[in-house]
Image 1 (cartoon, rainbow, N blue to C red):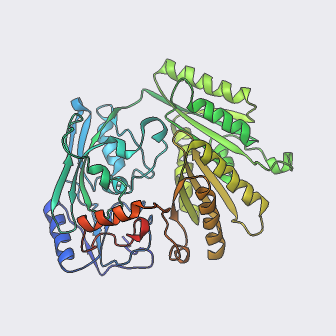
Image 2: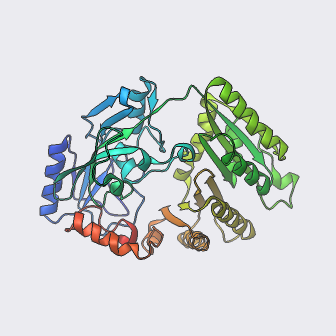
Image 3: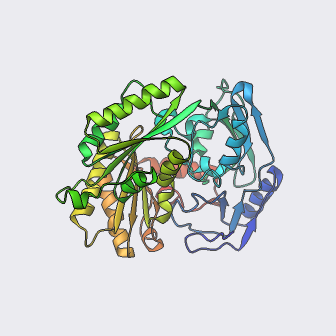
Amino acid sequence: MNYSLDGLTPSAVERPKGLDELSAALASANASGLAVVPWGGGTRIGVGNVPSGYDVALDLTGHTGHLEHVAGDLTVIVDGGVRIGDLNGVLEKEGQRLPFEVHSPGQATVGGSVASNAPGRRQSSTGGIRDWVIGMQIVLADGTVTKSGGRVVKNVQGYDLHRLHTGAYGTLGVISQVAFKLAPTLAVQQTVVAWFDDVRSAREVGLNLVNGLFAPEAISLVSGPLASDVVTAAGEAAPDLQRTDPGNHDGMWTLLVRLGGGVRSIERQVNEVTGAAGASGATGYAVLDGNTAGKAWGLLDGAGSAADVTARVTARTAFALDISEALIQRNVANPTNGPAGVSIICDLGFGALTVLASAVSDEQALSFVNTVVTEVSQSSGSYVIEKCPLAVKQQMDVFSDVGNSIEIMRRIKNQYDPANTLNPGRFAGKI
C-alpha cells in the first residue's frame, strides 16, 4: 500500500495486530515527538487538511481479532480494522445488519468509518453512524487505553464520550474497538428511479415523499451529467434534453427512491412513488431490484472517484435544494470558464449535498470551490471540501468555519493529545 498523503510520505509504517501492539506503537511515537496518521481501508483518508507533520503511518487493517455478535441483544462489538462489508456478511447470517451504510463497504473499515463519520444514503431513514454507536474503546496518543459507553443498549452511565470521537478524524485518539446497535434485515427492497425535465416537479415529488406516510430507506435527487448516467444504468434511455428542448436550462433531474419492507408494503410504496411521479409529469420512471438497483446506487457512490472536486454540504433540506439549483445554473450560465461537468446528489431526507465537478486546471478548481463556499455561506450551511487538487487544498481550510467553537475544540485537542501526535493540522481550524 502507498501511504503517501497530500504530497507527504512517512518515514515508518506500523502495523499493529492487537491492542497491546497498538498501544505500544502510539506510546513510542508520542515519546519520540513523531506525527502519526492512522490508516484504515483508505476510502476517506484524503478527507481533511494537509497534515502539518507526518512521520508514521499507523495501518490498522490487521487489527481484526475481536468480533462479538450478540444476536439476541441486536448488538455487536468489533475491532476497528474489520471491514464494513465483512461485518455485514457476518450479521446477515442472523438476519441482522448495520443500520447505516458507507461507500465502498468492501474496503472501508469500522474504525475509519466511525472516525470520519462516513456518510451514506440510508441516513434519511435510520440516521448516521453516530446514532448507532453505543460504546467505544480508544487508544490515546500516549498509548493509554480508554473506554466509553458499554456493550448493551440500556447502558446510560457517564458521558457519551464516544460521540466526541465519531467524526473527529482520529485527532483525539485511535478507535480500536466499537460496539454498535443493530437492525433486522429487510424482507424485500426495491428502487424507483424517476426522471424529470424541470427541477420544480422533481423537487415537489421528492419533498412530498420525505414528508409522506412512509419513510423511504433512501431518497436522492441527482442533477447534472450523473442524472443521465443513473437512468442509463437503470437500463433506460436517457432523453437528450439539449436536442428536444434547447431552451431547457434546468437539465435533467433524476430521483432515486429505495424502499424496504414486506412484500405487500413494498407493493403499496412502489405504487405511491410511481403514482406521485406520473402525476407530476415525470418524463419516465422504472422500478428496479437486485443487481440493477445496486448498479444505479453504486453509480452515485462511485462518482467521487472520477471527480476532481468533491464537496460535502449540510443544510436544511430546502436550502440544500436551493444551493443545488444555484450551482447548476451557474455552471450552465458559464460554460466556458466553469468546470467541464457539475453533478450534484441531494439526499432529501437529511439535507445533505454531494457536489462533484471535473476541472481542467487548479485555477478552475479553486474558482469552483470558492463558488461552493459562497453559496453555502449564504444559506447558513456547513461544508467539507472532501477532494480537490493539492495546490487548492494548501490555500484553504477544507472545513467550514465553526465560529467560537474552535477555541473549545483546541482545548479538547490539547487535553487529549498535548504533544499534537495524531493527525496534526488535519481537522477543522487546522487543529
